[in-house]
Length: 117
Image (cartoon, rainbow, N blue to C red; front, side, top):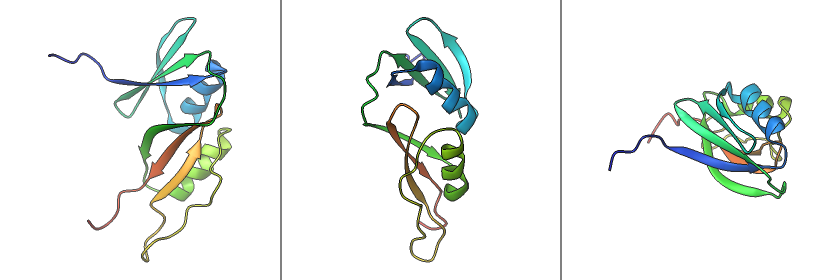
């Protein structure tokens, strides 16, 4: 089977607000739009935002690897999202993980590549 495209779909009560969040926080670029779907390209992947969501807290499985998790969490908050807990150092290294959510209560992780292992 030849795979043409891989995308991950999330739900949003407000598709425009969700798209704006991913554009501001992660530099996403809109690639497709119709009345029900907004597709955004991010770091070679595609997030498909499907309107009609209920705004319930939902774990997505999305992970965004960034150079600095603390700065990334601050950018998520500045874009209207939330990171309820401040990322903490672990084993003498800077924080490598932040649990966050977008404007539609879709939960995701920010991670940093660890220096070992």
